[in-house]
Amino acid sequence: MPSLIQPLPDGPLDIIGDVHGEVEALKRLLFRLGCDPVAKTVTRPLVFVGDLVDRGPDSGAVVDLVMGLVEAGVAHCVLGNHELNILLNDKKEGNGWFWGDDTDQYQYAANGQVHVEHFDATVAKPADAARYLSFFSSLPLVLEREDLRVVHACWNGSGIKKLPKTGDISSLARAWAKSIREDHKARGLWRAEKAERDEFAQLVRLDIRPNRDLPNHATAAQERQSLHPIKVLTSGQEERVPFSDIFFVGGKWRYVKRFDWWNTYDETPAVVVGHYWRRREDAVVAGKPDAWATARFTDWAGPRKNVFCVDYSVGRRFLERAKGATDTFEGGLAALRWPEKTLVFDDREGETPTT
Ligand SMILES: [Mn+2]
Image (cartoon, rainbow, N blue to C red; front, side, top):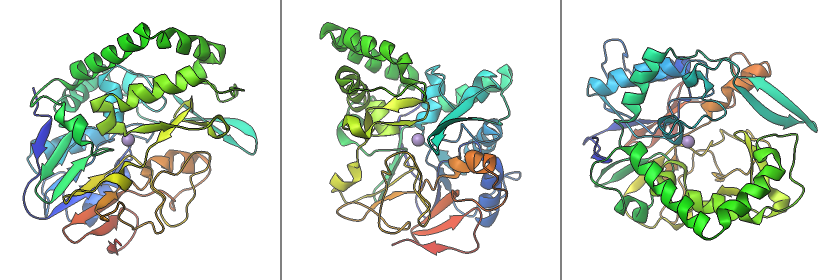
């Protein structure tokens, strides 16, 4: 069983953001970083912040590439929420590729209308899927050393304390989910939430907008996330939103939104995460709250300015392509070079200083 908390290697590192199946972007970025994924050579160790998969054109190719680098000992990778969903057999919008489903679709609203966009993704063969599962189940949740911490979404000390030294992530995640569910059943919350969800098609249809607050669903959803140590690390803490601000993203109506945990992170080691769909320049992500809304797209966050999100939304490219983009994209794949604290993008020359 894997160690859930593993050491980062010493010395300089290149920390790569969420790839989301964008294998061409990954190859271009690796080239810019002086890496050769075929020979499995790097100029310095690579660290992947998780969410290798889903939505993009070839998630399997990304996993194979990263797995090869990890097995060669030149890369490290933490588990993201998208890998966790697959480990938990949880079929969600964007991960149809893993289940051999070539009808996977993305729902979004534009100009007051509901649109559906097909994910044009290479589907996995069963033999390949088994290999991906075994890789995902080998990944740690946390990588750390004295000056630096890497986790997919949220550095949460109390959640990390609850982790055993080694363990099977899917068994642990199921056990924690079960204990939360049993508590909800004992409180009558489970039944009350189910009634609310049933009334609105389980909240998965964009064309059926709930016309009222669903307080039991909101409370249950918030607790399923924030009381679950593995969910907190891989997809962050959440807080309720007022009914007027509910939004549809990732295939369902949301009554909770991401909590800006970095504003309360007051420890010395820097933390690098992915997950938060950060913008480049003023590229606006329409239709949902923008969690990582720093003044500049290169800013570090938190009271000590030592928390950095390196996910620059390359995962939006499937949608940008569907809308006609070919070679210029709002979303990019980035590497944060440590200790220089500069960014290298897959589609830009040179290095961009962070601030
Ligand atoms: Mn994520």
